[in-house]
Structure formats: structure tokens, C-alpha cells
Length: 343
Image (cartoon, rainbow, N blue to C red; front, side, top):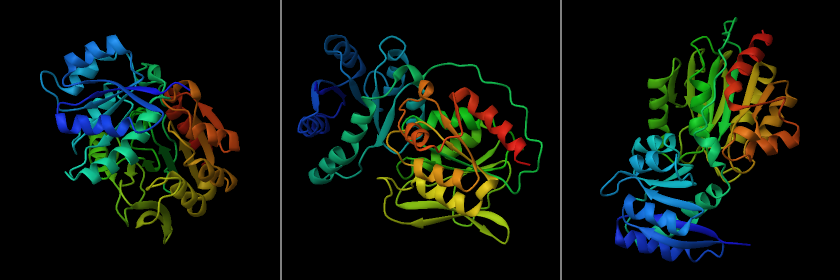
């Protein structure tokens, strides 16, 4: 099997060498070139044709985001961004990056090596399987008919991973203030979920926030599970849906886990719920979506042709958890159509 050929773009000599040394230790990875700035990176791409590029957001001569915007239309390839805690990472994802990792704040060699081995390597391997043509594919969105009910007794649950930040935005931006309450798990490092929620809140008609224990799930509102070491669950207190954020071990390698959320929705809402599973590597959420469907909920899965990584929706579909399989641009309209029949 041919190794995954990686180009490392990083202006710090020390961090760049550390990346190269640790990435090359993995038998399926080969760092074929390094670059200190976007101009060197462009030349390296043309010469070495890497499978994946790691890219620091802050670079000399040209920002990593500007570089992505210029690069992707001409030389599309999977890019994993390495970013400090900043909402610039979402600009990078919008510009075509597959995924990102949070740049470690520690300076100890052992901690940095742990970051590379347990976070960056995983992202690179996932990125190597991504469908780059799906990331910036411009597709027409169907006009929504709107929700005819009050929605107070209904709930929408969404789960996603790799490619999910843009996929979730594509769906949520089509929701109006009439949509029943929405709860979301998107695999993301701590700190970034709050910035992501604020970004959606600024760009969508619905109100979006990072969830806290006790937050009510209300029509026209979207709650996003905080990244870190806690899971988000749906509970019903005095007839009202709320979320509960509690620490717990990783499930399917993730915390928060889509399966944990979907399982709780199946128990708390049963046939009053709609579950949506979007692009992502692995199988997190598939069994939970099946539990939702078995409890009488309606379910939607993103189709292969529009997924950046057709992992989570594929496993869910193969389990029989997906009732409707839709292209990304059709998921919002299908959501409204299903909700209107659930009255």
C-alpha cells in the first residue's frame, strides 16, 4: 500500500522539524516536502503532488486562509489546518480545508509529540479519504415551505464530524424561526464550539448558542454541544425538553458523542423526534440513529455524493437507521416536509 504523501507548511523551524519527525514515524505516512510560506508550498505542491497538506493559519507573506482561497480552485487537495484558538479556522474550512486541529499551547516536547500522534495523525489519515470536490461544491438549495405547526413537542437532532461544520451551516441557514428546537453534536475541540455557535448565530435566522445544562430546547433555537470532555443529552423536565451536559468517557472515540445524544433523544422524545446524520468518518451516531428510528422517530442521512467523508451516514444507512437518504442541498426541505407530517 502506498504511503500517504504529506506536505507540511509551517514557518516555525522547531515545530516544523518536530512535525516531520513524528509524522514519519507512522508507517503509512511519508512527509515528501516542507514549506515555510505559501509561495514555497505552491512550488512543493507542483513538484511533489502530495496527498494531504498540513497548513498553519498564521504564515509569512500570505495568510493560510488567503492561500487556501487561491489554491483550492486550481490545485484542490485535502488540507488539515493547524490553528490557535481563533474563529479564523472557520474561514479556512469555508475556503476548502477538510478539517483542523487546535495548535497546542504547551511547549514540552512530550506533550507536542502526544498531540501529533493522537490528534494530527488521525486527521491526516481521515483527510486522505476526503472527497475534495464535495467541499466547495456549489449547489442550488430548494426553497423551504415552512413549518405549519407550533413545534413545541417536536425536536430535531443533528450529528456530524469531518466536513460537518460547513454541512451543518448549509442545513441550519435554511431553517426559519418556526423550526422546532434543534440539538447538535459536531466533533470539535473545546473552545471552538462556542465560536462556531456564535458564527452560526450571526449568519442564520435561528438563534444558536453553545449548550449549557438546563438550556431549554425551544422552537427557533439551536443548541450545539460544547467540545471537550462532556456529553450532551436531551431530557424532559415537567414536559419541557432541556439539555444536560455531563462529563463522561469517550464513546466511539468521541466526547461529545453523537450516539450519546441520539440515544437520549430516542428515550426522551421517541416518535416526536427527527434525527439527521451528516458527513463524518467512523460510525458515531449510527446506532443512536437506529435507536431513534426504533423508538418511532423519523430519520434522514446525507447521501454519499455530497459527503466529504461518507462514513457515519454510510454505517447508519447499512444498519437500517436511515429512512430518507438525501443530498445535502435537499436535507432542509426534507426536514420541513417530514416535520409537517409529524403534527
